Length: 430
Image (cartoon, rainbow, N blue to C red; front, side, top):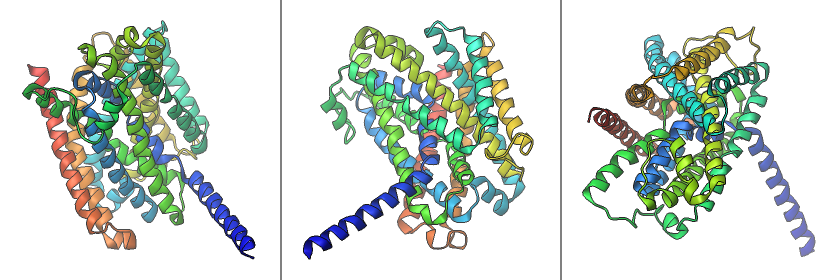
């Protein structure tokens, strides 16, 4: 009798587990793609420079960034599922067109700077594989526009999730570098293992803030909300979407961990400095082998592609939602002409700028970072205010812990953004 009861309980447990896995699979995608896209070409460059100049201790800041990313994007995901509206929709309806126009303007300009930087990375990295730069960029533009406009939400999500798998190349590069794994893992808990001089601490503060800033972005908040809204996830599955948000935050930091480990084990220990991810791909070859450098470069190309697609879509989504225009990946070009046209124009403009010889992409990065710093506090002000409202969120409103913790996180992000802008401008002037 006991055996029969145990068998029935096991069957019930297996049935519930199977059901939960299927539900999770049905909501999986938006948060993971958004979080992984934070590891775009600019992000790879930031993590590479961080590992090269600071070594393993920067992994402690990376762990903190992962927590902040999980908290903020969960708020945006929860807001969308409860209200059935994206963050941009909610801002427009509650705070009006003026607020929408201001936020969209800053978002559009900073997004364009980011997309230009992504194309620049593709241009530089393609030459490492002896591919003609201009044809490579043109191919990316045509292929990206084709699969986005001719497909649908499901196809776009599938392609982006496949692209996420290519980040596995960074794991290979890290293992080929033969790092001190015990030192790397222990630095996640507390920073140690280097000589903490005044100069090192000053640089740690500046670069650490950049690591935080490249992980948490305004476009990321709008994209995760819009992408989740386009997926039409049921309210009953909110817990599964929240779990995916935490999973996505872990995953993006997981791969960033290996980027930092690869550059620390090869470049930091040999006192080799660099200023970009592309340089890292070349510089680690003498220490970890040509294959490791090649995989690192492949990762940068993939990161640039993901950044181009996600950030461009973010702008198109934001335009549609801020101003009430039809726009969805599940609609045809004829049904959402403005949505897809804006997407294409971003690709074309950014590609043209990236191909112009002598263009100061560093100056573009300064302007982009400044605009991000100015728009991020406003975005989080609205996000926290909306998710705190019981009138809007009902029982899903932030509890006291979430309310105060999110506010503290926002203050940290604001301070980080200000320091990032100041340090970047100061570095450009000195």
